[in-house]
Image 1 (cartoon, helix red, strand yellow):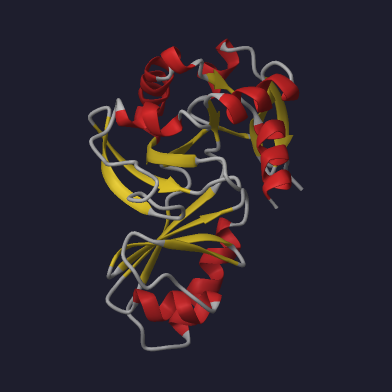
Image 2 (cartoon, helix red, strand yellow):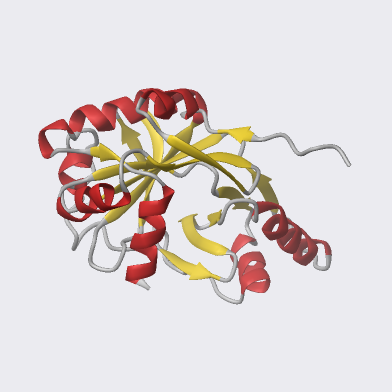
Amino acid sequence: MPAIATRLSPLYLTTQRLGAKFAEKDGWRVVERYTSVEAELKAARERVALADVTPHGKLHVEGAAALEAVKAAFGSAPEQIGSGLPVDMGQLYRLRHDQFYLSTPPGEESAAQARLEAVIAASTLFVTVTDQTHGLADLRLIGPASRAVLSKLCGLDFHPEVFLNRAARQTSLAKTKQLILRRDFGLLPAYTVIGAQSLSAYVWEAIMQAGHEFGIVAIGLEALRELERVAG
């Protein structure tokens, strides 16, 4: 059986220059850490931190019957545009009345797409499912200063009573088209910025520059896993 090629994030060279320590996981070469997990956790909890989470799966579900399709596939779906909820295969967000975005754990996008397409094939629903994992990058911004950093780059109101946890907004950030999702680690605010891979290095640098005054640092997956564990 031929070996499966390792996939690289478009930010591989950027993170490599920052001294990233890499590991192979789910067919991707991912950043495990830059310095120490303790230092990275401290930055995320007390200031602000940025992580490359591009390996997450990214599916768009579109069509007049998209709500019916995702409900049949996952058992539930967000009713309100701009809101999201967890499902068994990831995090599901409603972007328009006829469009949903599903973020899956790395490597699980194919199974999620197969489930959706099986539901569609067994019905008369006219819905399309597009895997955009290869075309989009994910950047995760975490920490008390994350809202202040984003506000320097984007015109959205990030007040916690306006941009709620599990909310989704399509917007312009640093003059690029991005989807911003909020999904906190417990009480710790966290946002995912999703956009074209071709622009990801530029967006990464824009966020790092905007976060400089707040002491922003890059963090790896070991720190993210610990934040997830503690948040439950």
